[in-house]
Image (cartoon, rainbow, N blue to C red; front, side):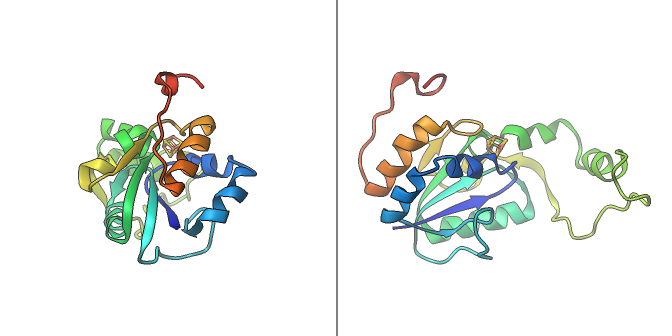
Length: 176
Ligand code: SF4
C-alpha cells in the first residue's frame, strides 16, 4: 500500500494533523509506505502507482492545478483532505480581492517586504479564482475539518489502508 500527501494552497496544518497521530503513525507504516509528502520528506514528485493520495489545500495557482492533475493520474484513490481541499477554505477567501490587490498587499503593502517592493517573478500565476479539489478532478472521499480532527483520523486512515468499511458517528462534524 503506497500513500501520498499532496500539498496545494493551504497552511500545511492538515499534514501536521497527520503527524499529530503520533505513535499511531508507527502502526500505519507497518501496512503502508508514505511515498510522497512535500512537508514530511524530500521527494520532489509523486511516483506512479499510488494507492491513496490525500490532497490538502485548495487550487489557487497554475502550479497547484498541475500538481493536482498529476496526483490524480497517479493515484487509484484520491481523498480531499481538510476544509481547503473540500470547499476552498482559507484560500477561497482570497476571492474577496482581485489578484492584483492580493499581490500588492503581500509584496508591497506590509513593512516586512523588501524595500523595492518588487513582486517576485517566480510566483506561479494565479488562476482567476480559487477552486476546491472536487471542482477540477474526481474525488473519491472527502474528509472535512480545519484541520480534520485527530479522533476521526485515527478511525478513518487505518480503515482506509486496510480497506475496511467505516461508519462514523452522527456527531462526527462538530464533536468527538
Ligand atoms: Fe490549513 Fe485548515 Fe486549510 Fe488544512 S483546512 S490546509 S489546516 S487552513
